[in-house]
View 1 (cartoon, rainbow, N blue to C red):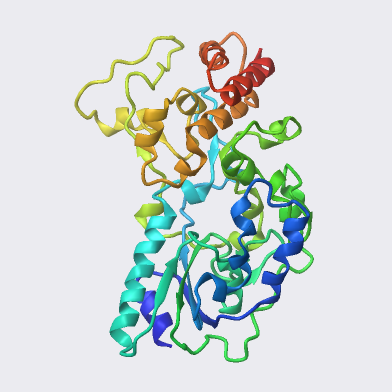
View 2 (view 1 turned 90 degrees about the vertical axis):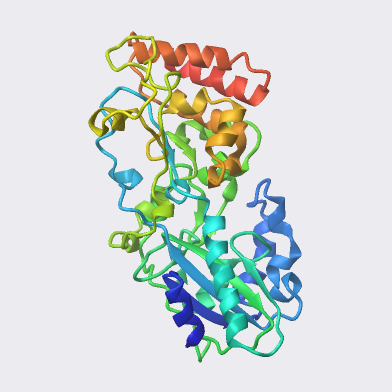
Length: 387
């Protein structure tokens, strides 16, 4: 089909078309919301999410595209050899390592929408969604033939696993659906329940049903206030999102790595204020003004892959906005990233009496006096754990 072929030419890994219908999963949303599982995510109550006609009146077809974001960096469960510098480090979900996926997806979807206008002469309307509107893309993706909804509630594809971003184009064009018989791909989760058993906060109340209020991604990104006391220890070193239910999924074991540079982990040149000496001193390096040789400067870079928690916790609001412009991490806001870094520091295995422990203790002591009560309380909790 022309649409799928054109999408592949534009760099999408998967593409399918489905008629805009009322699918069974869309009707289950009301019950899920009634159980309180959405937490503070009020936008999920938008009634337009249950019917594409409400989201875009006159819609006849939905084009769903998928983009692989699986880099060749280690998974969370495989990181057995952390940097040997004694620095406590955090985990950022793989999807947020690189450029903001909303922007990358939207740019490609707009190209596809422009190609539609070149292809079809009759007047029509089209609207692009990249996790940016009242649309449950994964459900449309299922009925467009891209995969099945796994027990971890994510779309799973036999070849790509679940490391995929989903975007959609709603259009008034009457496009031929990818699945002629309308029957979606079979559920291949079988008896496996690794995602359910591996979740440290027990967010899956049953297969295919998540209580978002217990999900580490919700807690570290969507929740604006203090983190629940009973879940703090289980959050571990996660500071933005969580990959555990995907890391343990057998379908992700052989998922191919993306070739897109946009999704590789961002790095930031270190400054004299951000990099501690490695010889146990408490002073900070005076970095040269010019670029140093690679063999001496690589370790100085701050990275979104296993970032230093001290770097995140001591970041001010202006620096947060500057560094995470064009990054999905801006979703959690400055308060959120500092709060999360404090909780992760409280869960770190810091050795008392070391210079690292002394620095972290002093930093948390300063943060405990913050005018932001959420940050102050989180820092106090972390102090109580490491002292």
